[in-house]
Image (cartoon, rainbow, N blue to C red):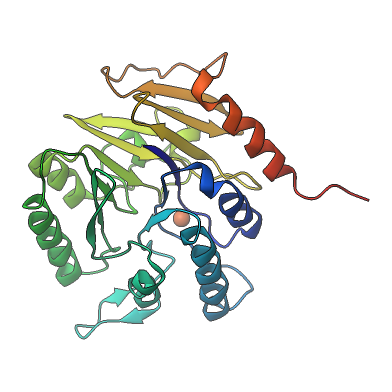
Length: 274
Ligand SMILES: [Fe+2]
């Protein structure tokens, strides 16, 4: 299986265009929250309409898995806790989103909502416990916007901005991979990283950069490799080997990803000037 992983696009439409244009190269596209930008001059309701259309285009090309981030909250539940109702309603587009655990190909995906209060946090804990009963020996991947606390994937250069319960849930359930975002700087600052390993669990946070393409991770489970692409460079880890730090930057691209990179750069360039 080949996966494309992004997060924190924050209504950057050229980045959405790029994801739409490369989506059919992947078995699954994973967008780990923060679709909207609360600081934008564009009204958030208009943003949800536009982003929903983009997600529909991506879902028409391949499987799409996403979750809410703290910028995506548009409503309050009965207990007054903030929730991303529009993300929870993406199921009718065929998008696997908040609160769902669904098997896609051979992999069980669990998409966790952003938790803004104790009741939603308990719902996430119950969702993970319920999903653990569905495991059948195949891979189990989580999508959870905030990365685990005390991880290089949640380090912003000054302090950790991670999720403490998530770190405990990872230790309890030991999923194969957790896809996160939220701490935009982590991959780009000293002592931070786009990748971590907690026990047997790989944790990824692609980070955020401006312009297309977004910083992104390409994972191929047959090749057993994850490659991080960004304006700061390209790095990779072997999923069948222990994580080594510092993660080495690549001087040459792995052969399996070279064709994608050429097409990716074509899509990022946009239309040619007349
Ligand atoms: Fe964000």
